[in-house]
Image (cartoon, rainbow, N blue to C red):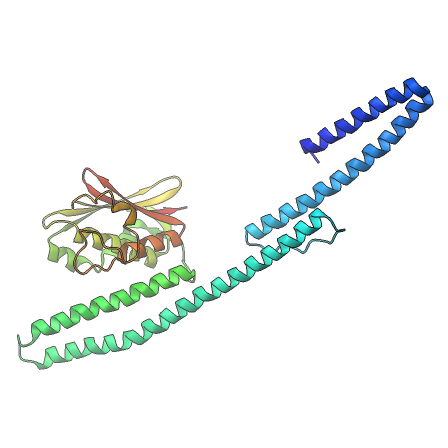
Length: 328
């Protein structure tokens, strides 16, 4: 109703009516001018009503598209007489119907993939657990020192396979959008302690020191288990790229829009050409550890983004720095 085009049309119609009235007034006097004004007024009113109806229909179509864009279920628009807007309305119905069908099919495919990977992971867990149990049994039965190296290798490789299977399963669940993140307020130190709990042996073996600077009064809103999983992958990656005798520094801060965990190591700088690919699945950089499969960092970022957060990496004078941000 407040469209400039509408007012421009109204002004043109009134100007034409006034010009016609002046012309008819000169030619036929007052009766001619009055007739011209009456006819021009009627035509202007009809044009205004017709234009307003078209604007209203266009507004309804715009609202319909907005509902589709936000994922809502748009109401069926009332029919209208044949014309350009009617054809446009029919085309919009066809397009949105096709898009909704495709979205439903995609969602079904994602859930099928997640369920399939879950079944595969479940089937693999059983033989892996049996292998580990046999390793424990053989270690107890064999004389001290005999076949220890072989059993240790079996345990190591089996443990890697189990971790990879579980990581892929978690990734598939994140991709399918079926992870119910429980975002609650937790002490930031508790999240870090949960993340570092299983990495003490790795840090001790590599001779790397873990330093944490996180005040006890800091709290973050997150899913405790999943966020600890993401941080554990960052801490593991940092330890693997820190030389013996070095340290990994972890800091926390609470900003107006987000809570941030920072994990920094004293290893070599990440090559600039590798930075954009760090979070690609199964991608391994030139300095990747021999046992790396390129899944830890992508999993960590997926967890962050699943909680409306993000993860970034950069080089600093002190060493590579990873940031995990959880937006409020």
